[in-house]
Amino acid sequence: MRSHSETRWAAIMDAIGVVWLYEWRREDTRHGWYKPDFYLPAAGIFLEVKGATPTAIEIEKAADLEAATSCPVVFAYGKPEWTNGHATGAELAYFHNGKRAPLVTIEEISQLIDQGLDSKSHLKFIKAITPNKNFQMQGISNLLLGWIYSLLDRNQLESFFEENNGPLNHFKNSLHLQHCKAEWLLCRFAEKIATSSKASNKVYDIA
Image (cartoon, rainbow, N blue to C red):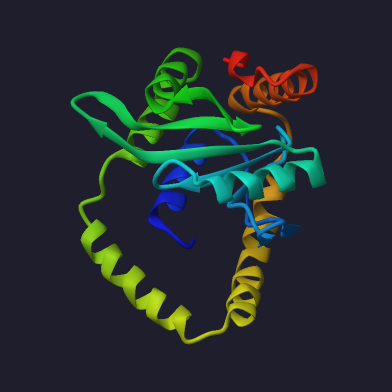
């Protein structure tokens, strides 16, 4: 994947059984084409991973994608970590008409997993957000990959990623046999987002 943040959120979703497709769709927006990081087929939502709070342009691109597909775009941002026995540092949020609707923090996700799933899932979740001792070496490899990517023009780079992602997405899609508990909850989030967006601009009532 293009960033350590994306691989970390992918690992979080794997831990709780959420099926994801990576960079599954490309769509034109007012700011050029846009390819969100993840699509969650069970819930019909896109998940866009950011290190910091998304910018106004990123939010507008997400709005254009939602208008074209009728699928909400949820942002996952911050740096999820496991420190002193607690999950901290990240949250999921939805943006609509300039308003931010916080959905759930990484700490609340941890509590939901601990209370609603088995201990094995929670241990996988903790592992996914625990800092990796080999992260420094991963950083060096990411720098090398970044240098290699810089030698390609954008069309070549995107063709490379699409070719690389195809088998992964095909495998992930084949796993989608029935909804897990986490996917059921995501479906409820998506329904509330759709209902709130149509009824009024008060999407801050979603939570």
